[in-house]
Image (cartoon, rainbow, N blue to C red; front, side, top):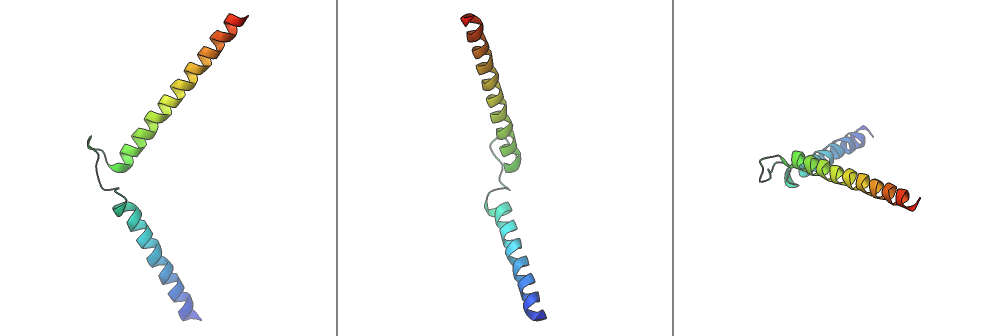
Amino acid sequence: MLGRLLSLVLGLAVVAFIAYWTLNHVAGAARTDPEGRSQPKAMLDHTREATKRIEQDAERRIRDTERKLDEAR
């Protein structure tokens, strides 16, 4: 019984290590983009830029809607 439990725990540890290594090495986390940033930093920067664009678009749409409401009055 204890042997099976130990085998299960060690097997899960091996699977977890392989998943961790795969996500961090094979998926390209160690590569840098042309601007010299690491992959996670580049993804974060792209996400921030997209968020900024979305917020600016939402603000523009709000202003356009307010302007149209003012014109309709």
